[in-house]
Amino acid sequence: MEIKGSCMCGSVKFAIRGTPKMMGTCHCSRCRKLGTSTIVFVDRDQFTLISGEAKIETVRPEPPFTYHRSFCRKCGTSLGEPLSPDASFPINAQCLDDDPVVRNSFHEHESDQPAWVEGVTG
Ligand SMILES: [Zn+2]
Ligand SMILES: [Zn+2]
View 1 (tube, rainbow, N blue to C red):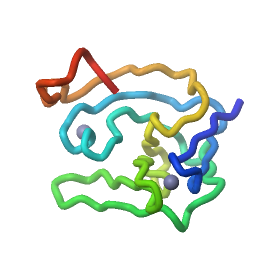
View 2: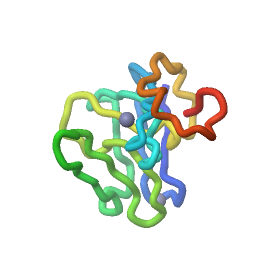
View 3: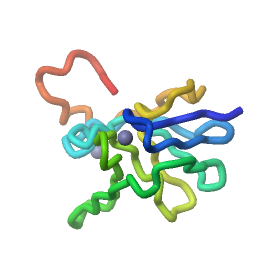
View 4: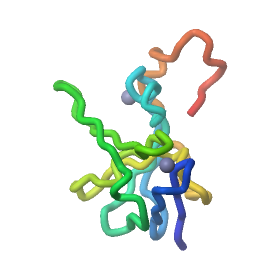
């Protein structure tokens, strides 16, 4: 099976072969502001960037933070780390156009959620 994903404007398109190995949500303010709270982890060999590589901008954080985050330069959709050289990397679950089958298996930094959040959100 193949799971398709894209940014809001459609410039960036990708496909995941098989199922992502994990889904999780980080509720810290950094992930919230980036719009990448809920991610799926994919292996490099199951991920194909179909289009839009030239549109992808990457934010490199100041230490001690290490996660790079990429977004579409045209529409701003937060993508996760589709250009990561790592063997496994996170992709924003909100970009998926198909059901990734895998379900959320962890939440972290839940106490950092703003007061207006109702329940546990992605
Ligand atoms: Zn876009
Ligand atoms: Zn976080």
